[in-house]
Image 1 (cartoon, one colour):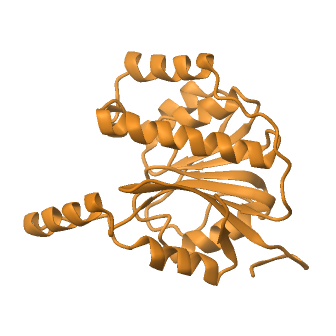
Image 2 (cartoon, rainbow, N blue to C red):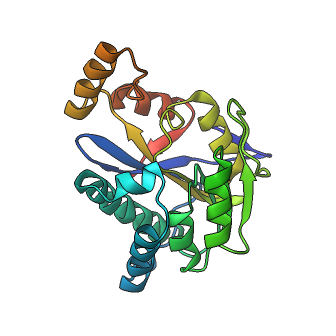
Length: 231
């Protein structure tokens, strides 16, 4: 198990399995209480308005496709489940925040937010949409979150290819989370039908494929550092 200070905490991993990609959430500490954490119609309407009225980034355009809408629905479900398990709004670190659509959704539920991204233009838009949030530029290759030890209740890593699978991310996740904290993210499963097809296509085109690992291998590595799947 990973150690925080002088205390040893069990870590739990919450996940919603989807055949092509898998939305993941992780937690640390004692069993959290469950209270309602609604994703209200007002929240969803606000997000849709942001997506359709602003100049859209690549990821925001992707979110409006049929596949993107499907994935977004799963992400909302897992995010809501994480909120239920944590039990109350706290501090969220949105890693790879983009324009801040998930940050905005959580802020409406009372969360305080720290946002990080390598895209300064997207980060500026996130700051504009979410006044009062702490927005920090993340440098490519930097393997440390701009967050203090045991400082956040929730880490988001949604649509950030290659990060959730990395060793440094596992270590940083353990460092920054409070006991009972969670991480919600997307894992790109190369053993899924979509992953296998994409791997073949990218190889033929000579392109980098962000589907790099199967779920069994990834979950085994998570367990090796004390992380367990809980949802």
